[in-house]
Image (cartoon, rainbow, N blue to C red; front, side, top):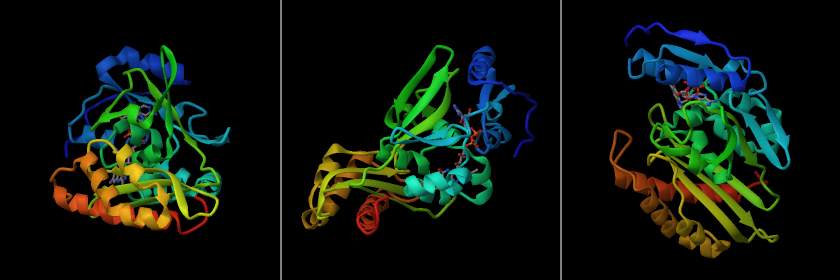
Length: 290
Ligand SMILES: Cc1cc2nc3c(=O)[nH]c(=O)nc-3n(C[C@H](O)[C@H](O)[C@H](O)COP(=O)(O)OP(=O)(O)OC[C@H]3O[C@@H](n4cnc5c(N)ncnc54)[C@H](O)[C@@H]3O)c2cc1C
């Protein structure tokens, strides 16, 4: 690893000032949150910046709140804070459970949700679950605020739709309705997930039929992937859907189109999609609403 090149750290007082700084420093500057990805890439000399803008000094971005049937998680909230938040644990336990499975306690205590999404590393745990939950990212730049769905903000590996002066200020996640069940599972051998699978199901009053489904497979393609055709196979009476799980997994894996890499062959990842869809389906329907 290379010694870190010299850079200047700037501490904006608010989001508008952070946006101005990013615009001013252009390609020489970058937003800095926990630094778990950024500083590592800079130490390896993969990225070079002369100015880092420390978003953690901006007040208010580290809050977790429930508003209008949604959970709002500020851009600088750490994975550890999500894992330990009584509000998240009570209102959206699947999110707290996902955060608990990220990396190790050192990374979780420093790495932020905003940094995870904005780095757009393909093996992101939060990205997979947030897409299944229908979460949206609030972003702010010099020209004002906008809201992006997860499939809009994540456009490729290490690539987002954010303009250079835009800051992710919060992730808004709809809370699950009483009729909804969710599960998040992953398979991991190395430092990051080999495959992650998130599933949200709407069930009817009897609990025996699925009226709507959203399955997302992550970590096997550049961005998390879902398929309307796979979701349609997950709707219907429970026993019928159980028989269609293998077909749904095949369709989902085809949509994701995994490749061979150090995590495993494409065929292995297609197989894992089937295994984890079946497990997620059983888990989602096994307990209390999540
Ligand atoms: C050893 C190790 C293991 C890991 N394992 C996992 C894992 O199992 N699952 C997983 O999902 N992740 C894993 N990670 C990734 C980890 O979750 C991320 O490193 C962390 O969340 C990134 O947040 P950060 O605050 O450190 O971002 P930084 O490193 O500070 O920033 C990352 C990028 O995002 C940009 N950025 C940061 N915040 C914002 C914002 N609010 N608005 C706009 N742009 C922003 C920065 O400019 C930079 O380009 C692992 C990381 C390490 C080092």
